[in-house]
Length: 96
Image (cartoon, rainbow, N blue to C red; front, top):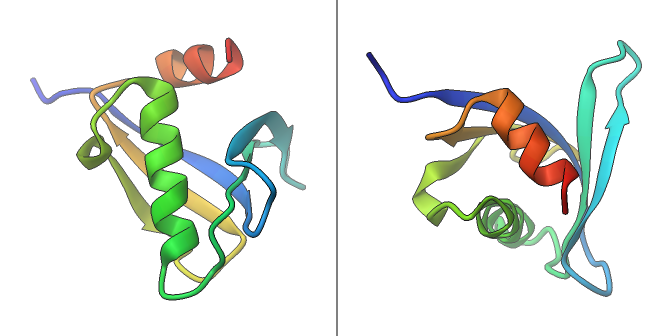
């Protein structure tokens, strides 16, 4: 059986004062979206890299376990997280 993996949506705000997660919100269709802020600017993928590092660190996973699946140039990103199912990811990020 394959390792668990999930995909989550993230609304990213680059150029913030601090790297942080701001909890969960909903998109217009009612799906959960994690709100995140990073200090990095959206130049040459720096904000995307900062987001991946932030989420991996908050989940206690290596950076290689979190990948940007969709939304390279969009405010709404889809991250794929290996080694955890969606319920575990939501529980751990909500507890922060």
